[in-house]
Length: 178
Image (cartoon, rainbow, N blue to C red; front, side):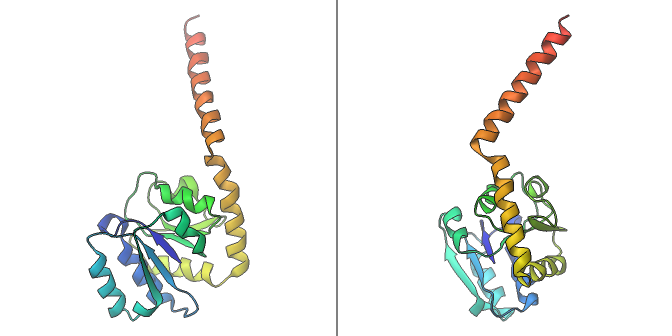
């Protein structure tokens, strides 16, 4: 299970640590990619939760590259706008478990390419992680769905959508000027 982000209050990485600890699936590891003011506190929490040996602190690195080694991407944030890491997780073909922060419902179809849980609910986050971690077929289906969804966020799709917006505005002006 992988996390990419700053170790700070907004991203709520301690929620992920608590959820991962309660899942208790020893064949799985947690990869924490990032850095920030909560790093030492998070490492202490991992030790208190008894999962320090199952957490890899990978430091600051390219998130898209790090995701190549993930089986699942998790975004435990309290709030977001449109997190770029979700687009990277789609492009990496990963199943996604995320809190219901902004951007999650734009990129995740709940139950199709990932699961969305309430913000700050480590029990719901743990249950969602356990569901995806425990079902290889589900992970594969969700990963394929993420790859398909990623195409909707490609450069070509963005250009086509932008052109459509301009065309719609031009057409409205033409209709309004008559």
